[in-house]
Length: 595
View 1 (cartoon, helix red, strand yellow):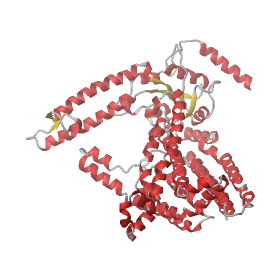
View 2 (cartoon, rainbow, N blue to C red):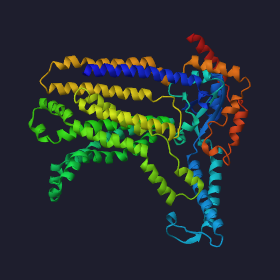
View 3 (spheres, one colour):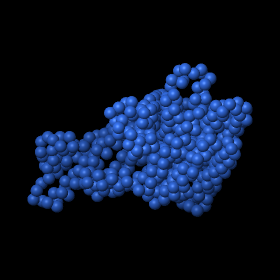
View 4 (spheres, rainbow, N blue to C red):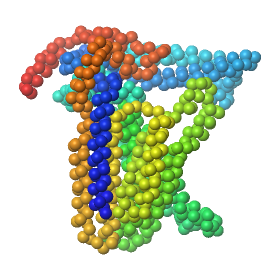
């Protein structure tokens, strides 16, 4: 049966990978024009003593991409300015609220206290108080804006570089720009709404250190989080509670209490531990320095899946039974320990059935009811909403949180694969969960949630990998279980499965993964040709000029810095050094050598 389930899973995965890769390529070929199709982000620009960062970037691409380079926009460290702008919006909201309140009742001037949140301090006129704070903040914002525009240190060694064609952008994004592979690093720019602007100000050299530190932090968070889970799992039964709290022994004997503790308490306790986890993992992903919301969600989903795999799955199997039999580990020989752990797999089937009902079924029901967002809206509407803008923000349904939803669904894939050949009674609970989840999430995505960005199914390779991991785990665990049944000859027959599964994963990646990480030059040329034929008078530079401006410089009162206009209107700034001539000849010479 393990062979049947494994081959069927691989067959379905192959078909799904092929369908999604085809749909992605079709989507890329048919989607409308977007700024990210023509733009790459270049990072780790080397310093130049004679030129500014902007001039250095422009000359580099004029020399190395002379036929396709169009324009660029340097990255500013505007994080402090962004905080001032957000604070200004908040103060403006309060000022509008008190002005509206005064207009409704001119006979009584609204007042507020100068202390924290207006709870204590000197009582003052609210309109005058917030107007004075707004004036001070506007001055600070103007000063900071001027500093960002004029201070060379505020310009980061990075830029968004746009090209005349998609073909030119694809060539730049998918090739090495310098003989030194650590400088002039290019990749596809995220679409403007997908950019996480705060992390663009992080120097590129810090990213490796940040990611190393976060990897260590994830390791400790994942493996040391088992300590409280082990404690809860060990006392979340009748005997454990009676030992810790002996005065509740008479209460534990009641049938209702006993059924609740044995059936639901372990799953509820585990759920409480997991509530705060996604927020922690998201913060860790932001510290790593990822520059797009989609990459943040993908990285967070990977961390969350690792955590669920280690703590929910393996943690529940090991701590739920092996800790109860700790004295056996001490008194047994080392060769008996794998048998003890192997026996625990079918023993925990009842716990996982309960977990599927508590977390899976109830979670799907909560998703369609959206009780938490409903309660939060009424709380915000009662205590926080002051203006129509606040009400619109309170009514915002948000978007589907991929970093949380996808790893949880992957857990049920894992449970189904592990128990399909061991304890098939668990499969109907899994099927019911997926049936309800399909209907509910399909409805929510179409009718409820907003879309923050468009990834074009770029997450699928991660999903595929996690299903493969679950399949291989199920194969190894079955080998361990059969060794406890005095059937040692099963290992040679089953050891082939993980090898074939890993080969299948490599085959699928080689066959389909390129569609998710590269933009085919053929597709780029086709789209460029069609666009030239249908829109011969398109002013692409005008279309792209405002696409990658930091939000604090965009729209309304946040006008674009004049220095940027000058750079755009003068694409060929006179060079201050002659080495570029030599560099151009050097490039031609090197191309001849390579040819």
